[in-house]
Length: 597
Image 1 (cartoon, rainbow, N blue to C red):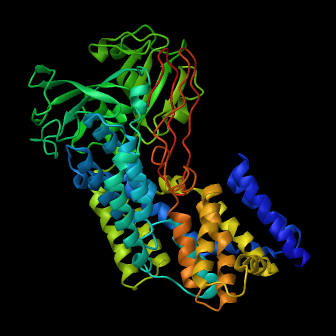
Image 2 (image 1 turned 180 degrees about the horizontal axis):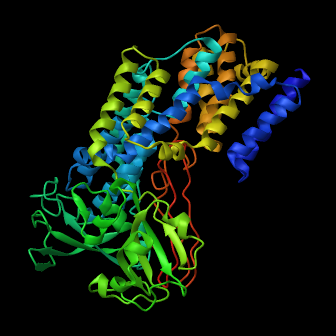
Image 3 (image 1 turned 90 degrees about the horizontal axis):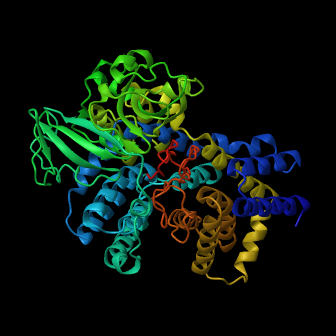
């Protein structure tokens, strides 16, 4: 081999080792590798940076905006509740999980699907008294295998398609992978349905393992023309929330306590929930409920532009030792107090009559810039927003779903390419205000895009220096190796790399090797490209093998936050991000009681 090829292989090996064995950010590792190839003269700047203009990478970036529109409007959540229903047994629940998750993941990013399904599944687990893992793991696997059915089902498919367009001038259609993906869904789904209950352990859920949370009481009102009127508490999904429970119902001035699950909801009912701060976030995402506090409606902030914030009162707070009413909190801070926790316990009674003290933890509804505005002010000791607490604008859910359907239809019929359809759909989400431009920018994960684009430089280096050809010769072992055996070797190597590094980086590294193997055997390269797509996407061995899933959706993990010791200040905790949006971390505050999610 030439020196350039040897150097490229050393860079690739060093990159793989750094990704698998260190905690250095993947984008820093890949950009360092790119820099090494350029500085050494192995690649020209144009060759090294070609990934940043690859159609697949740009399509992924555009689909972030489409996913943002679906999430901000609550479209997936709205659809999920109608597809899932209210099963009464484990087998029914598993079937209700497998079919919608696999079907929806074929046409939208997996993380959005999984993140929206998790609350409903946690609710099932609590109501059926089953370990959440028996439903969460099938959800994760169903989303993974469902994503292999179409070209837009996973980012890996788009990356490999982008490589095919760049290197071979071949572009796959929307359903080119369905001939392999649909049988995989049928086989995998059948296996999950019949063997999940037998193979998965009966582990206790995280919620049951943790101690009492900071406790709040949150009141919401049943909207007069909403979808919950006439439904029972159980059918509305309000009986077993993940973070709280329904304590009382106030109806026409009368208080109903210990209400049974078959109680029908009426317009104007005031529902009193008790639980952790995340309970308020859950309730804001239930279509048909609105905040019951009269002050909420006096805020000069659009409903879908609000968020939930926790704030600990400090010694310099202006309304100290005054009641909430006398402190004029709403007009002073443009925020409304939903509930107050003192020493880890909720304060009963009317909020307006509570005297505010140092150390009280307030659950607030306010504008999205409240945290930045008051984080360093002396009014509060600590201010932290509850991530993902902005209520969806359900009115635009049908619009967002219509845009998604249009994107799929235009691409599937060949009227537009995947990139063109995605650009049109992203523009439609912005034009219809399904997601504002400011939020769309925040949904685009530049670190993930950098990893994908920079990894193209490694593939280009292996191709340009002949390193890929040499590795392909090593793989063939003998001149008469059967094509199916070579295909199996490519699949196996891709699967191993995927378990050690990111799925997209594994696909980009293996692509030039796979193409070289096909060329040396004199066979069609497309089966090898498809094998890379499936090996990099359908990975189930380790939690890191497929990183399109948010924490809690991966095979072995449930939603969990780091718990502070009693009396200590908890640091803000961020969740791991997959290569799609939707897996944001959760900010938490200190309290004398431990926290739970």
